[in-house]
Image (cartoon, rainbow, N blue to C red; front, side, top):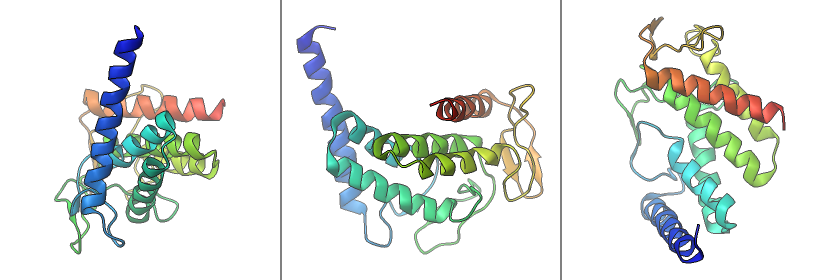
Length: 190
C-alpha cells in the first residue's frame, strides 16, 4: 500500500474511533457508562471498537473508555460464572427490566471477541478465562442448560428461548459459533 493512502486510512480510522469515543463520553454516566440509554443488539461490539482502537493506536483514552464499557457490560451480562446476554424479546433500558430471552449467538460471539481483545490489550489472562465462560454459553452453560451449538456439525441454533431452543440454524448463528470457536482455539494455542 502506498504511504499517502496508508496515512489517509490511518486518519479515517482515528477519526471514526474518536467519534465512537465522543459518543460514549456524551452519553456515559458513572452508573451507566454506555453509548445510549439501552443495551440492545451486538452489545460487545461497541466496547470492542474502542479496545481494538487502543490496540492499534496505543491511545489511553480509547483503552480507558473501552475497558470501562466492557466492565459495565460484564456486570450486566456476565457477573457470575455464566454469560447471560440481553434478550431481544425487548431490550434492556436504563432503570428498566432486563429481558432474558430470546438470547442470540451473535452476543456470545461478540463477548468472546471483546474479552479476547481486552486480553491482547492488557496482557490480563483473566480476560481469556472470561472469554471461555462466554463461549460455554454455546455448550449449555446458559440459563436453560441447553447446548445451543453442535460441536460435531458446527451448526448453531438461532437462539435460546425460555426452556427451549430456536432450532433454526441460520448462517449468522452458525458463523458466530464457528468464529467464537476459532478465537477460543487460537487463545488456547498462544
